[in-house]
Image (tube, rainbow, N blue to C red):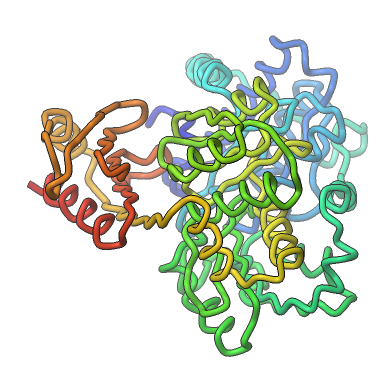
Length: 473
C-alpha cells in the first residue's frame, strides 16, 4: 500500500489504483480524529465534491465516516466549486471542510482536500497530523461509520445548498449590478467542471452578454485536462475570436483557478493576470495592503509594491503557505503561478470566480480591453514575459535530475550574470537583468516544471531551453 501524502493542496491519486473507498475512509477518519483532538468536532464539518467520476459517492462515504464519529456533517446537495465549499465552512462556522476533487489533474485522478475552520488550505502542521493519523488508523484498522440514510434520519448529516450565501458574499465584494449593465461580451469556460453556470447566474439579466462553452459537467473532460492554461483553451480562444468577445474566462475543474483569453484570442499568463489584479486593487479601487506571492509568481509584484508603497512577501508554492502569510499580515491579495488568487475580505483561499469578476470590473471601470490593460501595466512596471514547460518523469529519475540541478552552479546563463541562487522551493536562479529561472517538482503529480520570466520573450524562452537541456542530460 502506498503511503497517503498531502501535497501542495490535499491528497490526489489515480481512481481505483490508490484513490479507493478504503483510502478515502482512512482520510475521513483521520480528519474526524483531528477535529476531536483540536476541540473542533462540536462545530461540524462541511463536505463538498466536484463533477469527477465517483466524487458524489466518495463524498457520501466521507460523510458516513464523519457522522460515525458523532460529528455533524453539512453535505453539499450537488457538485460545487472548492471556493464555495471553503466559504460554506466560514459561513456555517464549522470546524473545517472536505472537498472531493483533483482540481486540474487529468480525468483518471481524484483527490481529498481538507480546509480549516478559516476556509483555507490546511497548513503543513495540520497535514502532518492528518498523515500521522492515517498511518495509525491504517495499522489499527479502526474506522467508524454510520450508513448515510441513518445519518440523515438522525440529523448527523444534513444536506446543504451553500451557493446562495456564496452569491451574496460575492455581490458584497463587487458591484454586480453595474457589471450587468457593462455591455461586455464574455465567454466563460468551466472546462466541464464544477464552476458551470456561476458567472451567468451572477451577471445575467442585463446588457452584459455571457456565453458558456463546455458547461455540461463531464467527468471525462473530453479533449482537454481541466487546467486553464493555453494548451487547454483552444476552443475558448476560437470562440472569443469568432464572437468578437471582450474576454474569455476559464475556471479549472473545481473553479479555484482562473485562466484568461484576451479579446484577440491570446492567452494571458497567470503572472500578468496577478499583476493586473494587484493593479486593480491598488490603483483602481485605491486599497492598500501587502501582496503575497509564491516563488513562481511574477517579479512585477515587487515593482507594484514599490510604486504603491506596500510590502511584498514571498512563500513556497501552495496556498497552504500563502494563506498563513495573508492572514498574519492582513494582505490585500495572494497569488500563485497556477492561476490561484485569494483576496482580503473574502476567504484566504483561491477563488477563480471572484478573480474573474474583479477582472471584468477592471475592464468596465477603465474601458480598456485586456490587451490594452497589459500595455498599461507595462507602462507602469516595464515589459515582462513568461514561459513554463512541464516535463513528465518516472519516479526513478527524480533523484538523478535533482542531483544534476543541485550541482549546477553557473556564473551566467545566456550571457547574463547569475546574481542569486536559492532553494526556497525548487532551484531558482536570479540574473542581473532581473530575469529568473526556476526548476521544481510538482507537489501534486509526477511532473517537473520549468519556469522563467524575462524582459523579452526570447530571453524567457532561452532560459527554459537551457533548463531543459540540463534536465535531459
